[in-house]
Image (cartoon, rainbow, N blue to C red):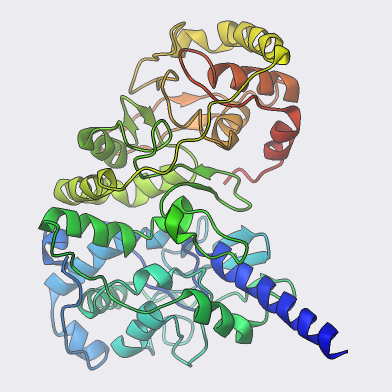
Length: 451
């Protein structure tokens, strides 16, 4: 009996740990460090790049006394974190919460971040807010699900947390009640979050790397801290925690069914052969000569990255270019079946795709992205090209690309076999190399949520 109880307890703990890690994607539990729209001219300059900068905070009154410069700084930080995305319901009031996020463990909801005294942050102090960002604890002491990415926000210094809170205090209060998460048992047992935290969370602000220059440190801080890039771009282990040795090496986003590609220097898959200028252009406009963003990343560019100053985007690109490559995947070996699949895919490409993407696969960027050498096509997971063929591809509208071109969906026209054939073809034409795509994979992504 004792052995059985111990095993059951261990399994329960393991399942809870899984939710803890896999949900780290920017959704808050009862509260979060969030919001924004509008670019503060002095934003990035004012934000400390070298880690903790001590700022005395005696609650919201003390923060408000710092004035417009601090509020502008907080607004800029909120943009860098793309906080508004998870805390605004479709068609709802900004930052009033309520956006539903489907997860493998149930449904979660973004919380109300407006200064409403009952449902929002109106009764919170700067110390309360710092505790949530830095320690992952709510105002009442409850542990927050790491769906609210405090494992990343903990790297933000107190000065930045206070500035973000000062900005949130300026929002229009919205008396919108928070919605309780709808998690299945045992994932709805918050008391066991302590186990996950003990194994995978360590509070601590970003530490300046003395052997690197200011630009690199600034980029590292933005990527590791407010940007929380590893929430999507790092795969998870069996307990749902990020695999540290595979940091920013890519991963499939649970339930959403989009593959977040590597941001390191992995040949053919990562950013190793990209220039910093190409990375900056993609982050700023959503399009580049190397490809365009789609899916969740399109929302990130539209609501967050396009608003950052050029020097911050340059810093991010500099940091990403410095990341070492992961081992390259072995080249696929195709059998006799491949020739038949490629032939069928070539016919479909000729009929439906060549006019925009060209017979040589070079496209006409930035309007029509190239397919030859496009790393999004040849990732280990074929999720992204399958989804785009099924549902269409749409780059975000940005100041640098205000009238983006889109690709129509072929879901009503193509069978699973036809989607598999054309995606297999473009993953292996023009020097591309990747595994064949099967109909089972297409069927799986046909039922994936569109968001």
